[in-house]
Length: 205
Image (tube, helix red, strand yellow):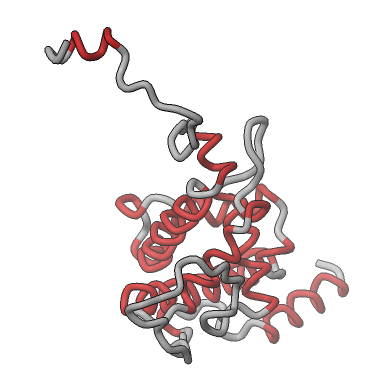
C-alpha cells in the first residue's frame, strides 16, 4: 500500500468516526410548524415552504435526490423522480406537522443520515458522489426487507417507506400518470353516457 492510499484511508476514518453507528443513532428534531386548520383555502396555489418551513438542508437534498432517482430513474417513457419534483414533495411531506408525516420525518431523516454514513464507510465519499454501481450495491442490501441481513433491517425499513413515498410523489404527477397510461382526470367537452354495448353487457339496455 502506498503512502497516498494510507493517508486517504486515515483521513476518511477521521471524518467518519461513527460510520458503523446503527440507523437509530441519528436524531430527527420535530418540525416547527402549525397545521393549516380545518378550513384551508383550497383555491389558493401554495408553493413549497408557504404553509410550513421545509426541512431538507443542501446535503440532505442531494442524498434524497440520488436515492429517488435510483428508485425511479429516467427511461425512454418518463423522466426521473427528481425531475418532476419528488424531492420537493418529500420535503413538504416530512415538514408537515401531522402525526403520520412526523413519523415519516424521523424515518426519512435518519435513513438519509445512515445512507451517507454507509456510503462513507464503503466508498469514502457521500452518497451523492457515488456512481450507479456503488449506489446500487448499497440499495441491494436494503431494498427487500424480508431478506435483509440483521444489521440492515432498520435501513431496509427506511428504504421501504422511502420507496413508497417516492412512488406516491411520482405517480401523482402528470408525467407519472402518463407513464402508468392512466386516462382519468381528463376533462371532456361532452359526455354521451356509457356505450350501448356496455349497457347491454350489464343488463341495462
